[in-house]
Image (cartoon, rainbow, N blue to C red; front, side, top):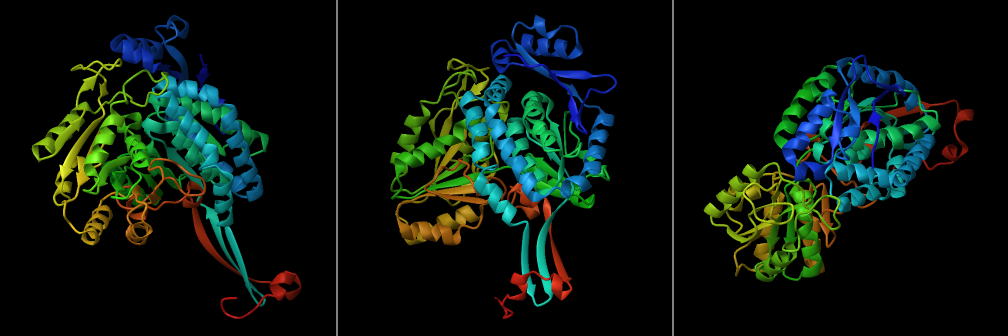
Length: 538
């Protein structure tokens, strides 16, 4: 399947600029099969030395690269549209949201094909895209967020209102590893009355621009949204320009924790609201009475995209009574996970760019007492071991003892490769003491995206519910990585979300709470307000 050239979408129209430069998408299959010639082909396409019809099916489309003038034009267009869009009734904005959710499913097939060409395994692409209309854009989520936008109470002639107002212009900087799905999730800020600028990363721009131009923009045009409500372009990093711009109010930032925390400081100094979606280094606790079949299914989600996504279980804390059996089951399940091309059925692994980082962490772990129980090799796409393979075999190490476990980087730090540590507390520790230790271990993790617990004992479940506070999302006997409707699926404290980190929907995170008190002439007060109880707390 071939796609055309997507220009920037600014102020309700397509913009190419005075001297249009293009960035082409060469298929992941071509890059895996014949890396350097395919990279050379991409360079020649971008330079205009060869044309797409000379690429023999290896190129599927291109995007115009925005220059500084176009990027500034997008910010101005968003700022000009903001006063009009915020006055569009919430009911109309919700109607647009429902239309976008339906339109996304209508465009599922071409979007999946583009994501596969960019390197996302087909199963992951289908799962991510089909999930959006039923999770972050679901009826339950939209209804909940809409309910938070305004509350009214009355005290005699006084009408008291707590309302959420849109921040204004929101810039979205989606990550390279999941640009399109995160851009679509972030676009829920539109429903709150914000206008939006999306920068599509150059490496995976085609899917993001397709979604903005073919799914979202037509809906906004159909409902009569002011031009500039949505602006999207492919371009280099724009963070410094956004921080310096008088037009920008919020920046939705995705990335690693070190750079994210630095960005937070810079954004606050510049008077912008930083909304951080950073790394996860999440715990999955498997207690002695857990359903091991479902626990194993959840834990092996760690290897989706070779561990290069943030919402997977990065470490397992296994009760010593079931640690051996759990380890054996995990090894058996992991042996079934093999490399392949992204379009192949059942493939979940992707090439790993940080191979040196992986082997550094593995070497450190083994040197500090961890035991390799599976994996550790580089692999070619057909599963053959190779010193130069792009894939890394799913790898499991076991470490006995909670004390000192965080001395290992693979336990302490965010990782972005398929190396899963199983941490086993000391055998013989009484369960009441062990429970205290595990709760403390989870709560002292520097990250706070999501944690999961597997147990069938209600008292144990309640203990974790009562005492686990370090998690934007806490899953009990439920898929660690799975997204669900109504609940926020991103955000959290610590190194996951910074000083203002919390699990909250983008629609709410890009608003601010205003208190209003209005005393109207008596004849203008609603009848139900006049009849309302005046007792405190009524």
